[in-house]
Image (cartoon, rainbow, N blue to C red; front, side, top):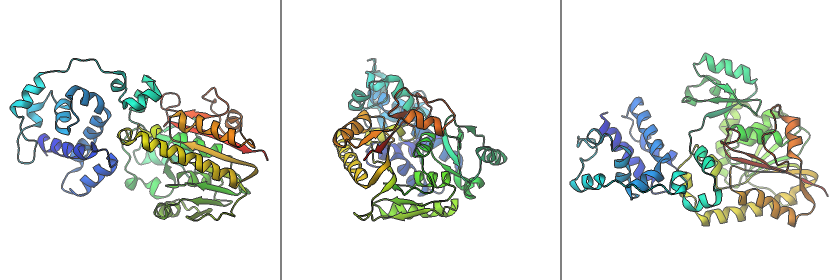
Length: 404
C-alpha cells in the first residue's frame, strides 16, 4: 500500500474511534478483519499510527482547534502532507485551499495542564498528578503468567520461540514482553503454559491467600483471569466458584480452562440467597478501568461522570452482598483496576463505617508472607500499584476480614 492508502485506513479507523462509543481495539479488529487484502506490514503501520494519534489526541485536538478526525490527522502528519494527502485512487483526498490556509495559522497557545497530561479536564481535576497521567499514557509491556510450570521454564520456552521476556519485579510467575506477541503463534500459550495477565493482577491473586480447604468465590469473575490464577496457586486442588451475571462471559472462560487444563473451577451465573459462608470472597468490581489506560488510552474519553457515579453505586452494592456471604473469620478481597480514590479508599471507608464487624487486614504483613520483593507503598491498609510506582497497571487491593 502507498502511504496515502495507509493513512486513509488510519483516518477511517480514527473517525469511528473518536465517536467514543466503541473501544478502539474492537474498531481496529473489525476494520482489519473485513479487509483481508491488507498485508501484515501495512496492518502493523496502520495500527501503530492509530494508537500513536489516540495517545496524543488531546494535544492534537487543541492544536487543531477541532475534534474532526481529518483535521486531527492533518496536524498529526503536517510535516509530510503531500505524501499523505496524495489524492491517489485509494488514498486521502488532497488538501483543499481552506485547509492549507487553516494549517498556516498555527495555534501558539500553551497547553493547559489537562491537555499536557492527555487527560479529560474533569478527570484531571480528580487526579491532579501530571507525572502519573503521563505514565498512564505510555504503552505497556505484555505481562504473562507462567501456568503449571516455573517462570524460568517459561522464559526458556519463549526464548526458543524467539520471544524475549524479563522477570517481573513482584509476582513470582510474571514475565514481561516488550515486543509484539501473537498468541496464536506462541506454542507456550497453545500448550497451556502461560496466560496474559498484568503483574498487578497476579499480585492481587496471591494476596487472596487461598487454600484448598477454603470455600472460595470469584464474584464478578468477568473474563476469568483471577479464577485461573487462583487455580494455579492451588495447583488445581480445592474448589473455586466463578460467578458472573453474564452467561456469555462464562462461556468464553471454558476454552481457557481447557487449554490450561483447569479442573477446580465451577462456572455459574446463579448464586442462591442461601449460598453463604465463604472463606474468600474475591470481589474484582466493575470500575472505571482508569488503571488500564496504558493499554486502552481511548477508554478515558468514553468514561462519563454519570457512568462513574453508576459504577460507585454498584461497587457499594456488591460490597454489601460480599459482607452478607462472607463467614466470620473469612475475607473479602476488594480490588479495582482504578486509580480514583472514590472507587478505592473512599469505598472502603464508607463500607467500614456501615459494617463495624469488618476491618482491613495489614496488607504489608500479608505481602511479606507471599512476595519476596519489598512492599512498594507506605499504607498498610491498602495496596495501590501504578505504572509510575510499580511499573504495572493502576490497581487497588484491600483485604477486609470479618471479625464476627
